[in-house]
Amino acid sequence: MQFNEKRMLDRLMEMIRIDSPSFHEKPMTDYLEKYFKDRGYEVYRDEAGSKFGSDGGNVLVHIPGTMEGEAICFNAHQDTVEPGRGIEPVYKDGKVRSAGDTVLGADDKSGIAMLMELLDVIKENNVPHREMYYLFTICEEQGMHGAKNFDISKLPCRNLYALDGAGQVGGVSTSSPSKYGIRAVFHGKAAHAGIEPQNGINAVCMAARAISLVKFGRIDEETTSNVGRIEGGGMTNVVSDSAFFTAEVRSHSEEKLQHQLDLIKKACQQAAEEFGGKAEVELSHDYPAAKPNPESFLYQLNLKALKAEGIEPHYVISGGGGDSNIFSGKGFECGGISTGMLDVHGVNETLHLDIFQQAFNVVYRMMTENL
Image (cartoon, rainbow, N blue to C red):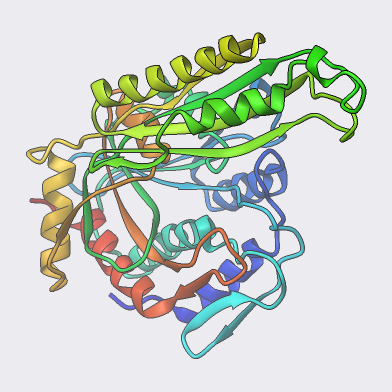
């Protein structure tokens, strides 16, 4: 089914020009609430953002079905990463990109635009469709806080399909990892670095020693770990009395994940003991693993729609996470698709309309066909 390119692009560019970086999604939330209410749909807007410092809210739209079949919730997120203010999108040769030194914001406004255009095409052609919900979450890029704080009692169906993927269409995730965040804080003792360094305890060196005791990067085929930030101290003539580093561990195996966390905690304590200081390690479970049931309705419908479009599915073990991880942990069957975004989270982010069209056709089939 061909979408209306001008209509879709006009709407997409309108939304891209609405600044909505994580924690500042209110203008986008307002836009979505008005857009769907003006078209007569039942819209629920929550106050989830007030729980974690965002000015926006999750928006849930109910679209009653006109055919038999299980209901599906289609999901996309409102927020963008930085630099994401004052974005000016340009379209040329079948691609949309930013005209300046910002991200494009196709992640994930291309998913929102696709859902809007799908609804327009279905309505203007009087195509029967299943019962659907559109869920537009906030703060997906910064910890999936919108999904974590969404009241799932408002969503009666248990199938959730995210339009938030990058790359080519056809990848089917068989597993995505659980992720823990780590903040290790080291306490030393200040002293004059030129007169009495022997009387100080250098917290920066403690942190460096702890990091040196652990392997980071690719741990094995299921597990990764990374140090993202290290900070501490001040003047070079003062022995640093405080420092910290932040890190993460992801794994498809809870046993391997816990083993890596234990190694990091042990290394921090060992470094503190060697230097005579103290270490505190804080852990945050950012999201659980997601392992779709290959026999589920949503999984099988996705495969059918891909194959009907002549797209051979390729099965992938994902290293990333998103709203689907949160909803999977709450008992939902989850899946997702690329919208044609490439080079996301950078100033070279691009939306390819030929890939967008493929995804559009797959989701259209999922909305209008049954197994």
